[in-house]
Length: 104
Image (cartoon, rainbow, N blue to C red; front, side, top):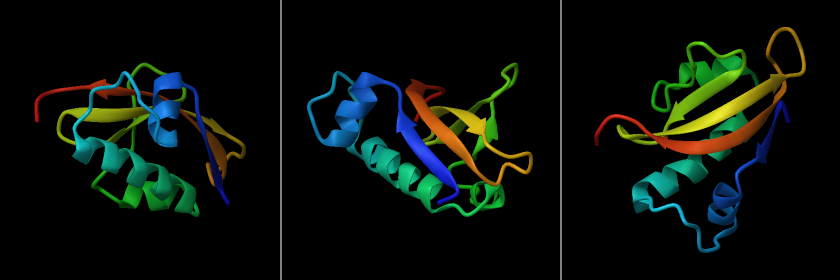
């Protein structure tokens, strides 16, 4: 596996574990959350994530290692990435939060 995924937010961890979470998210966003985790784990290299325009994996401006992936028009999964090599072929993805951007 090129990328490891860790969940650093207790509410995201509850959501992932199928427990009751304080996060009030539409079902389609929760489904995309799970699908996005699967995409990260399945990626062989950074190009796999960049090539899939759906989640729009992108670096957040003004940050050293913070990225986001689209869950819907309104929601983004914010991720901190610690690359374990210079080519970004392997790394650790720390899921931080689901943020509310724009409007659906």
